[in-house]
Length: 499
Image (cartoon, rainbow, N blue to C red; front, top):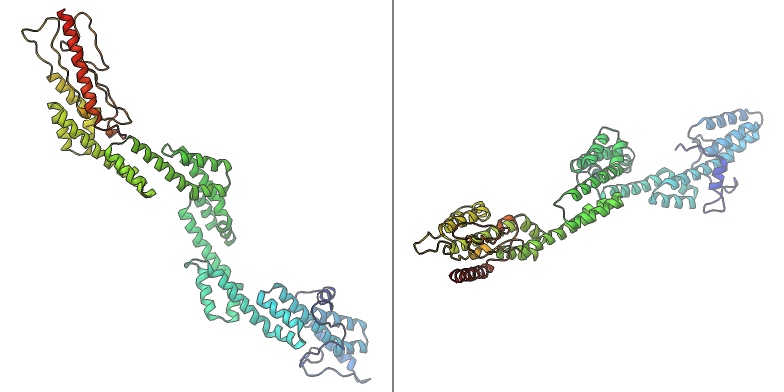
């Protein structure tokens, strides 16, 4: 295995005899590699001392140079070979080939194992430490086979970790599952060292498209830029960029909520606090965690207000919704209140039909035969018009015994249903009064003048407008009071005229 170049000083420091591993300080203590040849040739044995005059020195020098030129030679072997050549003596060359080469090899193998330990996974580290504490044969076995077996264990664990939390559509998960099934050290290593980045690129592109689909304007713009870029740009968007862009969208969304007139007080106040803090985490927390809570709170407040002002049907439906879930409350606000209010409106119109004059009764019955809009229109407009017709028809003619200065007056009670109103306001009815030629006095806010006097009717919001009133039972008392007051006024005026 080709190693990065390491100085002899570094190797010596790593392999100091005082640490955990055996010493190679002397040639006598150094174990001999099993089956090791003489000077890196792969043949058995080591060179014997060269007989004088045999040309052995030239042979040794050539062998040392070959070892030095071999790219597989380690740093320690190279340094020792250069030192032997620099000495230039037959003894130095022979000493390197017989003793120094083996020691240098042992040192290089220990450096190699130490380097593998430094960058290996748990299984590799454990195997390397065991080999470094063992014999030279243990060290060679680790470098030849043991490191690959241990690395395969670490690779399997790493691939399992990578795919554990990935979605089913992930290319990394799909291909990682396949390679785990194959299980060979070569397949596991190739997946991590060669194929993984390509599979990740595919996953990042798919994820970027998903983020684009669900993102706001800033997120979509950033995603488009990333999709047009390199793998590094797409990875940067998925890992960091999407969150920066989403913070821009979150701020814009909170500002929109606050500006919306339909937004409740709780949402508005909490959203403003999030904007004032302004960090991406706080903005996201508001939208994901606080907003749903505040929306439900505001919805229940709105329901309570409607219930407090509603008619019988509205109050019953509101009570049911209040006891239910948030979905029940929303359904009442969006649908239920209008259905219940329509029932209250029909009940009010039915009572008006029973107590009203001919024109009122006719118009009320016609409204009841129609849809909800017809009922609401009657309460808002038709009732008043029909009542005016009944009042006009009820005016008595001029009889022969009538006084020239006063026409007879009758007090007509306002229909009980007329007192039903919304927003807590009750329709008030004032007594009909007379007007004579001497005083010309009138009473009320809406009058009809003539020989029969004047009449006043207060006003209030109808149930169809979206709020509810006090209920129909209040009408009878108001009508009775109005009629009694009218009779008292007429009696007093008659006594005054006769006197």
